Image (cartoon, rainbow, N blue to C red; front, side, top):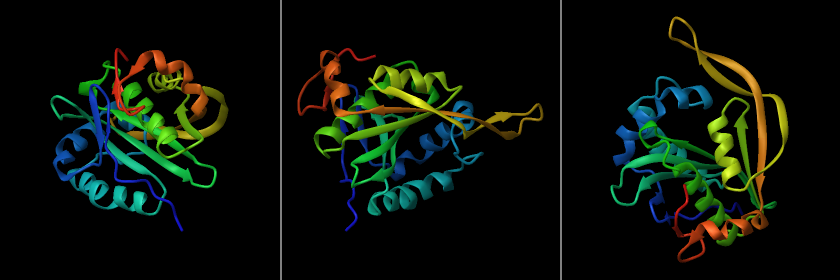
Length: 212
C-alpha cells in the first residue's frame, strides 16, 4: 500500500501552510511569472492561469494521492495573502525521506518566510510523520536558496556536477536553458536540536518567535 501525506495545515506565528485552492490562482500565476522563479525552476514560461488551475486541481492532488509529495500554499496569518509555495517530492516512504523545495513571491521576499515555512515543514515531517531525512537541492548560482538551507540547519553533502538546468534570458528576451551544478543539502531530526532557541510555541512545530 502506498503511504500518503495527510491533508494538513501547519501554522507558525506569522504563516499558515495549507493546501492550494482556487482562490490562489491569480497570485500563484503572478508569482510563477517572476524572473527569479523562471531562472531557477522548471516552471513553464509564461505561466498561465490555466496552468495554475491544473496545478491546484490535478497535479497537487495526484502527487499527494500517489504518495509522491505534497504541495502547500504559504500564506500570511494576518492577511491570508499568498506569499509562497512549499513542495515535497521524490518521497521514499521506506527510507522516510523526501525532497523539500520552496518558492517565495517577489512581494514577500526579505521577510524570512522561506526559512520559516521550510523549517516548520521539516519539524512537522520529523515529529508527526516520523521522517528521518529531508533533502534540498539548490542550483550552484542560487545563493538565496542556499542561505535558506544554511539558516534552517542543513548540512551540505556535496555537488552533483552538471545535474541542474536553470534558465537565462537572451538579449531578445526569450528564455534559454543553462546547465549548472546542484548543491545537495540534508536535514536530519538531530540537526534541529540547536534550533530550539529560535522556536517557541505549541505542538512542537506550530509557533515561531523572532525567526527571520
